[in-house]
Length: 237
Image (cartoon, rainbow, N blue to C red):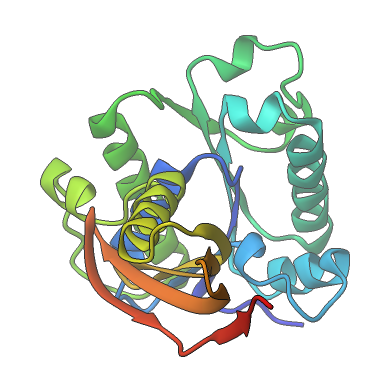
């Protein structure tokens, strides 16, 4: 299998939503696509899916943060992804939060496999610098030419907000529109610079019990569209 000159595999923790959202934002509309395994896991064994995706990528880009090294499940997957890339001869690059290298749970094999750049995860400007470096390295690997403009802090704040915050905004909106109700979230996924959140809510009245599906699109912290289906109503006898 040959590598895809238009794809990079991003090895990361799903908890690092600020970085992942920013990577999604700066690659939007470009000829290179960042591959996030968590968004592509349906329909296939995850081990096979990851091996296939890394084999079909021009590079493995590791975002090493405390959320990786302090979570054994995530750390094991990242180490596995590194091993796959090394075995397949896929170039490996790493960006590491300043606090990580001091942690005893840091996977030391990274130091023997590739160089790494440090950054401050708590700093917006440092995150922007890091993501810009990832973008530049991806284009360098691909051989494609494109003018790369570093995203501003304003663009960062106007892009995708963190997943948990978007989820909270959506559920509070549904509760307000359909109160009193019980709200559950079934799925949440990025859609360009929007979050598309889908779920179900149930409402009980003196006459009975109703249940509806709903969907909400959020841009920044604003709800730009929403739908409620007709749902079902069960009368109380």
